[in-house]
Amino acid sequence: MALLAGKTVLITGASRGIGLAMAERFAAEGANLVLVASRLGAHGSLPGSLQEAVAKVAERGVRAVALVANLADPNARQSVISEAEALLGPIDILVNNAAVALARLPSQCTLKERQLMFELNVNAPIDLCQQVLPSMRERGQGWILNISSSAVSQPTVPYRDSREAAWSIGTYGASKLALNRFSEALAHEEADDGVFVNSLAPESIAMTPGAAHVAEMAHKNPDMVEPVEVMAEAALALCSSHQLGRVCYSRSLLHSLGRPVRSLDGQQILGDAFISAFDR
Image (tube, rainbow, N blue to C red):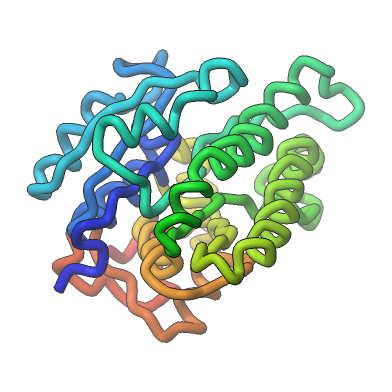
């Protein structure tokens, strides 16, 4: 039986990248999905759109709907969960994936830039958690997964290609560290309610179209990237089990569970947790 058959999942930031990969993997396990992004169509030069993501997920034979919301706006996100429930019913699994990362030196990151990162990366997930919890508590079961980042720790200098690259992700990392701390506290609060809250980050850079700028460096250092399927499989593992209060990384989680990495359609085993992004 499919792991998520009959479950309804809401994923934010689902029009491309890790969000879309998780949506595809969850759909392969029978989940119906509400995909959330800030717009229905294309976003500048970035590949993919929410409209295309919904069509792609629906090909798995599940129900998939789009919900457009600017999660950086507190007013715009007030009704996200209620709108999602009106479309597909109660939410069983909430995945807070939407985020913004502005590369700014910590001495130069403006108040406006800091406010944007903390609004979308911290306050939006908290608001959605608070909106979805009453229904999960009433039904005695639910899963919340907050997507974090390895940027919570200061990387070794030089990082990627420069010292500045290591420093410039500091404020973004601080927002994700705040999300981790919230996740741990919420997990303890919900331990007796049957709601399983965890935080998950890519161990390395997830190889999505948005990470194409690191491809050349990654060929010289394959350990700096991982296939997007690794994050999708790790997310599925946390949203289909009774793991609780974990702040973990994709490869390490899968390795600890002895779980292989599967293709996004679930049909093929691609390798173990340490599969290379270039060997699929």
